[in-house]
Length: 225
Length: 191
Image (cartoon, rainbow over all chains, first blue to last red; front, side, top):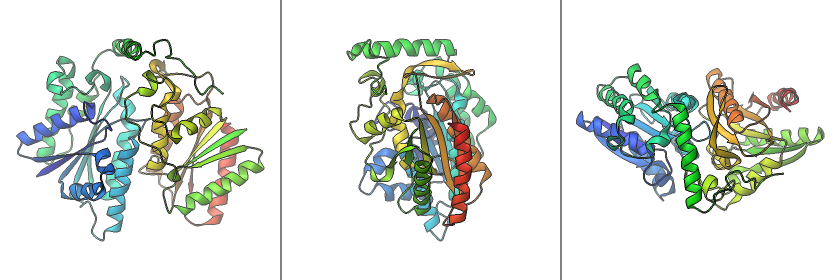
């Protein structure tokens, strides 16, 4: 069995999508699964990237999409990749990807509530149906800003439920099963209380702006009509 | 009324361009001042997720391309219409490449709305939002996802009113005009 991780974050490094995705790949390798990783934006920018994307997806038994939530949905490059794969499926006499392939997605967002990822996961489910893949369920993570791209092994006790959810997901995927409800529930648990997350967030923005010399401009209105 | 149309049709999607043409005619006839962007013809770089529009150049995306001008036009409008093929229940990549770049219109700091966390508004007024999805035929699941997405966008972009319309059009003009009637009724309710 082999698994392909597609990273939907446009960040070249230190993305939460990559942190959760690579942790899951490590678990799958422990179960004897061969793994591969592609960054979607890099693929779309490469000269032969679209073909490499199609070939890699076609060769995978399990495709894992790890992506941030952008404006209640997937980032534009992820949707573009889906459109390319769907066009390949329609164009081919044989369904590509094959019906035996499985798709899962791990969506993270910067709000404390994991439930805000629901629409993006529904879009992933629809994509699977339209290209003939089996949707095996998805995981929703809220408060991704608290992980901020740190490797999960170094994210401390705050990320223990995330790690456990991915441990269970790795076991299920390697055994050819759907993602268990326990993993979904663990992943959706808040990393910290909402008041603490939003409070730390506000202080973080203030520090970043001060460092960049834009302190006091937080509420600027450049497009005020 | 200033109305902005963001056309997310991909190359070759003639049915959506036909919807666009009829839509402009109908809106102009109804007295709207209409401004349109065919997004597939406009080079817009992807959002890089670095939050520079919140911390480095507050309120303006750090990438200097057409998305800045379109965002300014969006904020000047009274209503904006997201015209898109319903794509896996959501927006096309052509429309989404612009929307990802529009988060500068809200603040990074949070507020609670109906028990959920969202970004505070940057401005005192925002345009109303119309999600206009096009499908070749009825698809309840895709339409439900699309309506949820538009509703959630309206909350996050602080639209004072919003509506979702899905019309079923391939190349059939009668279906197109029936869809436009539905759009008129819905827009009257929304705006």
